[in-house]
Amino acid sequence: MSIKDLPADARPREKLLQHGAASLADAELLALLLRTGFKGQGVLQMAEGVLGHFGGYAGLLHAQAGDFEGIKGLGPAKRAELAAVIEMARRALAQRLTDAPVFDSPQAVKDFLQLQLGALAHEVFAVLFLDAQHRLLGFDRLFTGTLSQTSVYPREVVKRALARNAGAVILAHNHPSGVAEPSRADEYLTQTLKSALALVDVRVLDHLVVGHGQVVSFAERGLL
Image 1: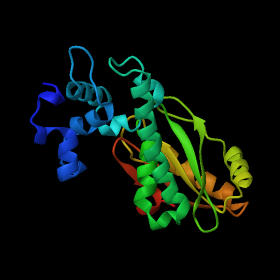
Image 2: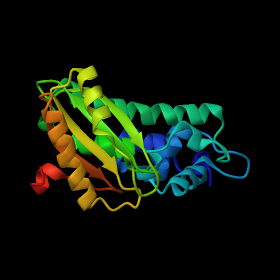
Image 3: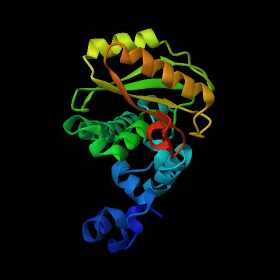
Image 4: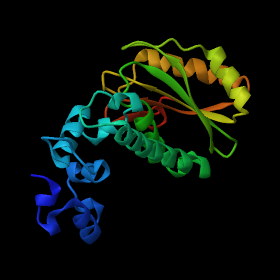
């Protein structure tokens, strides 16, 4: 059934305007953005297919523009719109970290890192560089590895911290397995980087391990 065949009060746009966006099912919400389907498939079915392809919104919000290529019905215009919405979400979270000290909104830090690293198929080590008031100066993916490990070079982290004129950092990396539990190697790396950065008066405030739908904080675990 296409949207035009639905009763007026059951159509996604009308439901949203009358009852708010939270009243819409996942596919209805995405259908509003996609607007049209293609021959043989209505936009609601298409939206369900896109969500199924990415494993729901958690996967969709981690997608890059190139991930939409090859999905039937997603032409250049729709791919561009989806990529734009995802980038808006990332920038909104980054702005919260720029406008206020990160510890004013620790969940925003975790949400930001989930969007940046949570669905990657390979391990990435990244750093949030902060000023003296713990506001975000920049976010850099410094090292990229394989499915299970990444080589991290403390000297390069120190050099980038100095270049950013950072007063503090938050370390982060993902576990492509989806399990966010820190390893002994993660703990050793954290202490190594903490010692190296202390030599240039840069504090390590936390190390966050990103899994699928979970972010584990070294600071909250008492591991710093």
